[in-house]
Image 1 (cartoon, rainbow, N blue to C red):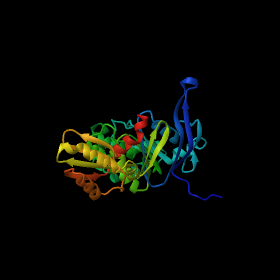
Image 2: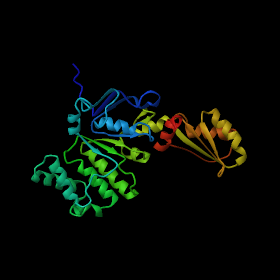
Image 3: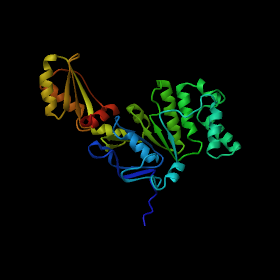
Image 4: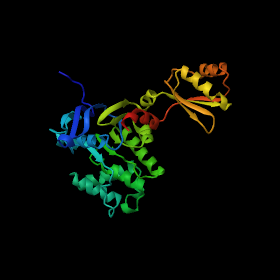
Length: 319
């Protein structure tokens, strides 16, 4: 007998098709995922990659065509009610009543979830204080900033203390300060033990928040790992600033022979950029090889790619 503890989310061969015949669209094409408890998992992908479909299946809003998906060991199709009792879902649109105060919104939701009046008020007060909204608790929601509204929206999903929270594009349309507030809220959720399934198109958001990310393209997971893992897959960026523009051709030949790929000439500053496998080449040998070939180097450096660069490199064949 297998006594392995159930994962937060586990999918096996998940397929979702829409339409029939020539009009058939394959939104998911054999998705396998296992997500551990207590983590922030980031799902990345362009529009049409299958992100929304995967979200809908995992939150019991759609049934797969084939394969299986489980949340805490409960099947999303045959045990949908059990799954819904364990999760919270925050979509892109707010579910708050602008006419009510923040406290009143939470009290109403608490009663709708079956809490007594006293328990609903106690839960509302605890959440408002815990997530920094107590000072604005009795103001109408229509006076809140975008970041405060979004934070209250997230807090409203916590009344039932879900073990897993789905966040779909939580900072879309927010200014940098509001985005920072939401990031702090997500970190606080993770620290409190809530597992988070984050769907986002902001690569810096995933880099900041996610313990692990997966890239979805054409309905398939094409990359899966920590943000650092994904960035390491495309290597480091090498930049060589030349003293003389006339050395450009010679420098390109030397660097290519040493394994530097994707060499690009920057016309504006006589610089060359390229990619090297992470940890494969040190700067001193590179500089020595260039110097011995008569190339005068003004500056040279290696830097890690951003998650944006890694994402673009990983998905370029699907663009």
